[in-house]
Length: 277
Image 1: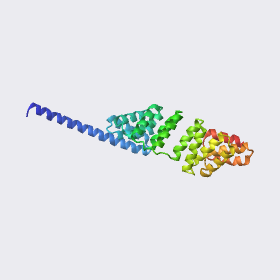
Image 2: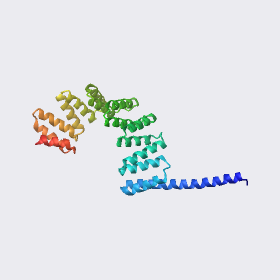
Image 3: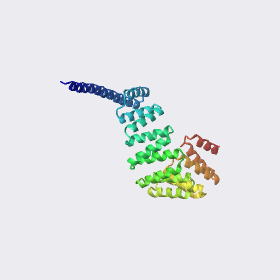
């Protein structure tokens, strides 16, 4: 054989050997990750994180593998590590909607809101049929007080066929936050038209009527809403305050007691106790 032939053969042998090493590392890494995921599910978190960390040191060979690692890291409370893993997953597979969704969620969790918004928007360009992407984007905007952007997000969701009662109510709630009561009321009524027994829409109507000073209409709305969702502590509390203002304390007490057993909100509990004294 010529020197050239021997060189090619030697190179091929080395590549095969290296390939075997890479395949073995990939196999061990993936196995450890799956075991870590199982340990996480079983509640053995320290073991889960130990195996996941070792798996990552061996090398990650699949973006799905990274997704498993991010789940373990997040469960262990390692938010910064989870964020970095999610970024790496997206860099490896930038068109994976699930990767982008994961980056958006964790980005928002660690306060990287611009990254989260960008991830959701990129995902929506690929799968506008997935409502969860609109919801997560809207929730992120709401968390940072960008209510107009929430409205734009839900308007876009509606243009893609997501005109559900919850979407309409969220739009109503954002208009309410902005003090745009006529628009808020219109959205709540549209939601109720789609689903007459949707308590969220009925309570929304009551909230608008209360702010407008239409006390009797608000009372009727809250009572109707409680017929649909009797454990809504906030509605019971509001009704109680309205009845107290009308001098109907005996009726109010009943609603205060109902509110008391249906909430763990410390601020609301304090208000209820003060009215019961």
